[in-house]
Length: 333
Ligand code: PBG
Image 1 (cartoon, helix red, strand yellow):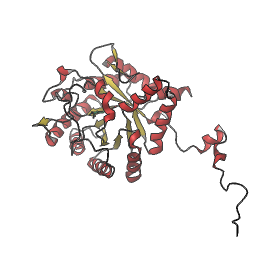
Image 2 (spheres, rainbow, N blue to C red; image 1 turned 45 degrees about the vertical axis):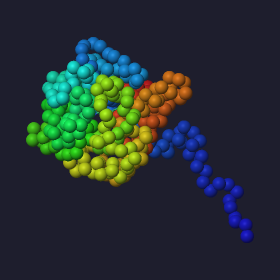
Image 3 (cartoon, rainbow, N blue to C red; image 1 turned 180 degrees about the vertical axis):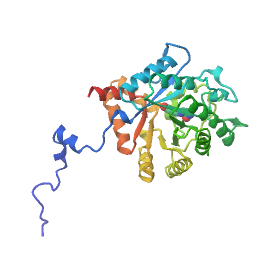
Image 4 (cartoon, protein in one colour; image 1 turned 90 degrees about the horizontal axis):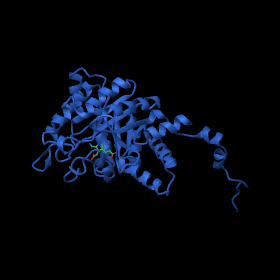
């Protein structure tokens, strides 16, 4: 007997794609300015900006200019700005003391931004690499990155940033126990409402190359970060680091890098339902910009599509160098 089939496809999935109106109606994901955290690079001096060659369109800004930039970002509806200091060899020492100096570049920038644009949340980076003579996120003793001594220094760094007025602390160092230690110290110092966005699943990635140029770490770094950042081959391990960081007092968690790790984002969101973020890192930005500059892809469209992909994968928001460009585009409609 021949099977009886309707003379038309049972489901015409193309019906909901027929017009912009219907496509808009059934769209599952949107990107808004609210989803964006803007990472910016700081430099010493006043009234000056320096281009970062491996990140076209990205500049290092002096404190006065970053305060202006934060004001513009706030006007564009960007909720948060994240600070990364450029440091030359002269700021790098073995004891990394500059990391918790209230007058370091980051702490001065926090105060300037809070004065100029109090409504924008200021996020920081907690790791010793900008101030470490060897470019590592932790102290190096006898060729080893020592965990617990590093955590003590990270706590001092966190307290100095909270004292300067930071709203969100971002430990990016991948030492064990740092979230709990920082949270305990914040509570003891009365900083009850300072958030921690933990770089929980941070992989030892080659996609960080342009960032290390931008912050002056490329020349300083000896060896690799494989004994503290995660092996890109691992997925279950990300669930363990996220569970640990949430239990220790992280309010939000991050997966980093971004696009090559969308599977991790989805697992983290589904498993914990916690505020989940991704970092679209420097190498991802550089690849899109380089291909766009060659006319090989439409950079604007790829920017929008990539940010959409993070939302679809389960992110509440994305740290992205595209933040101001995307926010401007959204504002223009
Ligand atoms: C360092 C830090 C890195 C990034 C953010 N914080 C680099 C690294 O771990 O070597 C990378 C960000 C990017 O590539 O855009 N603590």
